[in-house]
Length: 314
Image (cartoon, rainbow, N blue to C red; front, top):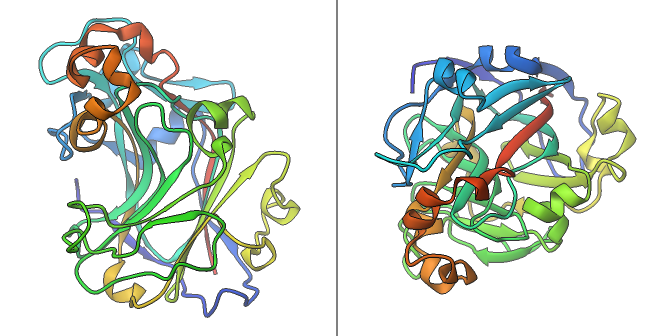
């Protein structure tokens, strides 16, 4: 991951306080979208069965392209995989941010497909000391979005202030009593928030607000999105309870700084692979890697279709 310019976005001062947000970064659509990202081509840090390819390879293979006014990011769904795994794309923004409102409008996200592990997230260069914010994440045939923070020691969250369901409360990646790198997690309660359910609802909008006092995630269908959000003058204080609200015994500013935006689609690995044997997917193949390797057509629905990505500052 190359060194990038750090953009400091002003902090906010409370959940209920109205804030005046202004557009800071409006990511272009189509193939110009990729001008603000680098293509990660190293081995997958999560041990996935995946080969992350460079921009020219991705474009020539049809893994990225302009789809009307939207941006397509997908995986190889034509060939039996070999080597380190199925060809895919992982993007890291050239800009880094501290605080802000991050708004992603999606026409489609990767479907609920066995072996897949897509995510839209932010992460700091010194992991986990600079923090990680998982905004959209799931594996296999998951139907509800999982939102998670990963930090160094000394950050826990309360079980209040959100509509989702708390799965773990300690954000430290090595927290005792939790699975390794579980972080603090909140699961959405609606099956329209991830994968097939999200796509059947016609896509939607995710908004992550990061301040000195909290991090929260909102999820909207296109029909239910607040008018101030769609008009470009967002005021999260008017949106009601978020799907996830991360606050408690945690100094946000000491655990989260200079995060870059990441899109990726990996396969198997530390999550999707580790739960394969206990999932319904296990009836399809003896191992996750075997299934992903030999069933390319299963991944025709494994793609992001991005209408817009915007970052607002206060």
